Length: 173
Image (cartoon, rainbow, N blue to C red; front, side, top):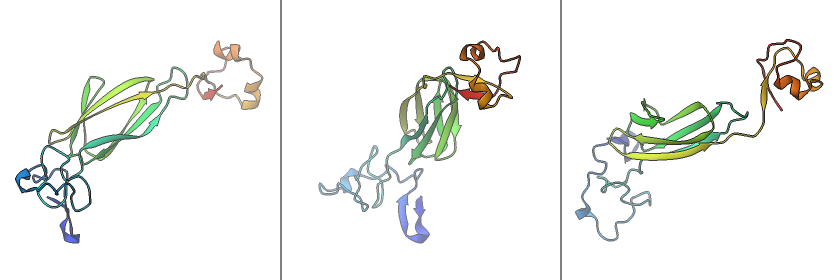
């Protein structure tokens, strides 16, 4: 029900049955803030108790672009606030479950994406984001030092004609 009542923290947990279960009839016109000085109503109704639970929200604190043209190395990290877990995540036509206050989506190609997040109490948030692609070519090389590589023409590398060497170690141009 509460975050940590043993230490005097009587804020409601995100899954508390007292969340959005209060009555507006008990609020006066001056009851616009809770004891933390934050808005008294953030959900469908006022919470029971002296503190209002923060609204469920997702944020994107880390969004990494793709370093090499045509690659799928984009990454997004999602942080959750006041989510009642588990969370159902709809992404690219799939639905999966998340049991933590943050998660990452790695190996994304360039493009625009949308996530629909629904917590265990039915609260929903939608995030839209774009993975950008840096405009530079990357090639794969093995067994070639940068000094030797710098003397090889870009056209020969693009064609894979580097004295028969297998190209498999990432190098940026």
